[in-house]
Length: 158
Image (cartoon, rainbow, N blue to C red):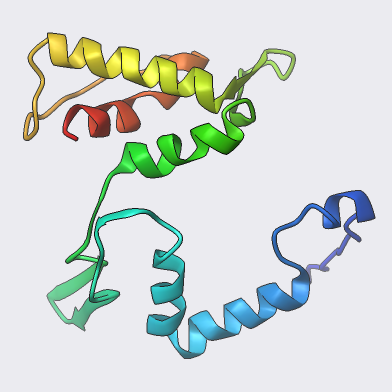
């Protein structure tokens, strides 16, 4: 039989958390009991080009399982993951990359990531990549390439 070990969160960390355990439990219960309301509120955290009207469209019929979230809305991945953080948090760490050896690590700020994503997106555009194209990218375990592709591709089709 397994045991559950709980560790107390140090006060200096708990003070910086976005929610406390009671808020988490309330959010969890809402997500279970009234998922459309819960996920409708969570969807408002993102910046939408065209706001969604329907939170989810699901079917669990045998042979026809389909789960679609915010399907009538339009958003931009690069804007939500990167651009919206630049003004207030540009110098904060966006990504912590760690190699196989824990002593090899790199903190990449939102500004650095934005610069690199723009550079990579422009390279893709110079290669003639456009909306609708299928792109495969080999990504070795280096910090820069692990974080570029999705936002860069999103920036290309803006």
